[in-house]
Amino acid sequence: MSFENKEGQNVPSASFKVINEKGLQSVDSDSLFKNRKVIVFSLPGAFTPTCSSTHLPRYNQLAKTFAKEGVDEIVCLSVNDAFVMKSWGESQEADKVTLLADGNGEFTEKMGLLVDKSDLGFGKRSWRYSMLVNNGVIEKMFIEPDKPGDPFEVSDANTMLDYINKDAKLPHAITVITKPGCSYCKKAKELLASKELDFEEIILGKDATSVSLAALSGSGKVPQVFIDGNRIGGSEELEKYFA
Figure 1 (cartoon, rainbow, N blue to C red):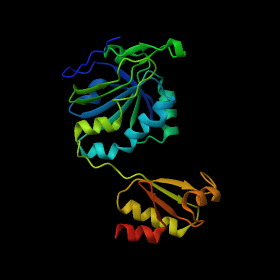
Figure 2 (figure 1 turned 90 degrees about the horizontal axis):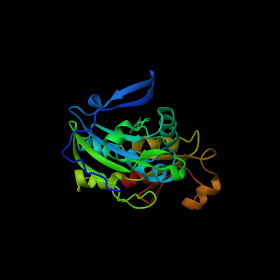
Figure 3 (figure 1 turned 45 degrees about the vertical axis):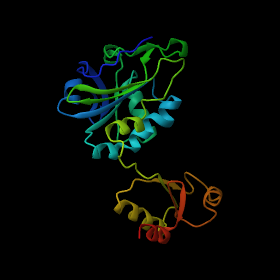
């Protein structure tokens, strides 16, 4: 199967579904793309392994970095219904990406990227791709190669960011292990927030146990802060790190 690269062409006219505080709503392509810079990445299905483990989370993680590069919105598109997309986004905590449902495959078919996944019981779904749309015109497309299965080689967030600005600074990967009622934990989180740094919080008793804490940090004390794979330590060590 050959997929057409539509760089330089206008995005197709279509309507998408989304669930927000007003309920089930329609979003038309003109309002989504006109006078805006939008990243769209499309994938075979919500809750599927690659989509959940890598594709969506990384775009969500890099959302602030893309915003600094002038991107107005990041859209995740799939031939699923809006209820599934909303549930998936909440389960992934992907609050910085707009998840839109192309439930009937209208937009995906016009893009020439609607494929038959009947062998998996999926029916018609989207081939995996990403694109940068500038004022309704497709500036750049990254279409996964026509290979068996579900290739994931070029539509990732890092490839898109490298196209937009290869010198863009990537965000730090930060994890903080805390426990409820810990004043030092609160201090560490406030310090990270003051630096406008996003972080993942692992709460003892909810997300992990004291055994996990000891295994990861070699210490039984909280908080424990990790930045880019390196253990920083508690709130005092974090202050020294930034100093």
